[in-house]
Length: 247
Image (cartoon, rainbow, N blue to C red; front, side):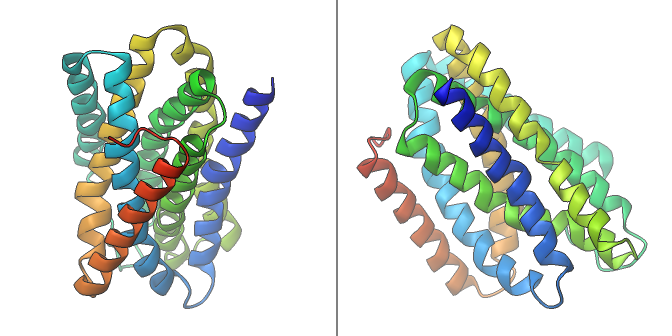
């Protein structure tokens, strides 16, 4: 029961709360752009550490490499197909692109479901560890710029600030649902946990390669590279000190 309550608190704060906070930052005057330029590359570095030093090694420990590779590929392909089908683009500057906010909210929700499932599976099997907390912290950091991206086009198109923040928070609910699914299903069989972790890793890699890293490099590349390196190093150290899967 303690692990379940911790999972619910963690997914609610980092999933729903992280996106809501990002949405709130976006509707405040002159706050979204500077914050995102720092948070985006820093989050990318931490996500790289979590994917390659925690998620994928743990997935391989609980299953064979071929199913893990297949699930990782699926985790990257599904959000990619959603982006193509919905014609999603991150960078909108005109006021008639409020539907983009809803498109992005759907993409973020799709991504947060498997990530929450992997987090729930990890807590169910390994308990409350630094690795699980760091993973949740990474989700929260990632959700800040995503929350900004959801709220900004809605707000710029004339939407009310409260509605923009609410839409951002709504996209975080699948994190909680995914956490519950992973907690009760992922702990039932190691192969399930391996598949969930691999799927979540693939979804995170898609966000990294096609969203966070390209977006980070649009501004000051030197600063972005240093922040990504700092995030990668910080994630590696924290996983190592916390007994995470650093190989």
